[in-house]
Amino acid sequence: DDVAHGECGDEALDWCGRQFDKNLENRVLALHHHLIPVPLSGQKFTTVRDAGELLEFTQLFEIDLVLMGHRHVPHVYVIGPTTFLYCGTSTSNKVRADDSPSFNHIILNEGDIEVNIVNSTNLESTLLLERKLSRTKFVRPRRTRIEHLLSSSVWDD
Image (cartoon, rainbow, N blue to C red):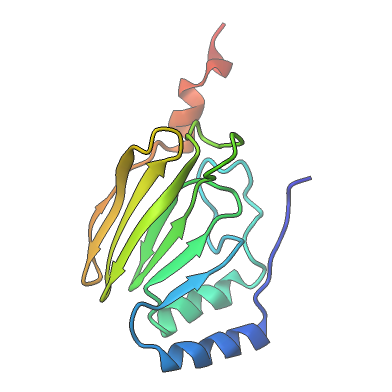
């Protein structure tokens, strides 16, 4: 069973809030579990138990970047001032959604964010996100789950 839930909790949120009060630039929050489910990840129940409170926290403290990875599907969401970035798996062949092993190359500078997905096998880089001064310029589209299912060999006779 691969269903797992993390939880931040009130004490950790309070501590994080005090840290972000001291640091006004390049605010990054790293989590193991997801705040928002990821398409094509194979599970829909791997979000943190207090995801609602954490999402509200990211907006209240104007977090620039939230890093997550539990299901290892490279993906991105942008909500308000916050970029929610999911990573692939860099060294394992246990990948999802027909992705290759990969890692994210992140450039964060004064609110500008650029993210490239780097294929771990051949080091080819693909732009995933370009966000300048909190305005999203580019997000790489992904196939939807339905498109993925319809194109899979499961439906072949």
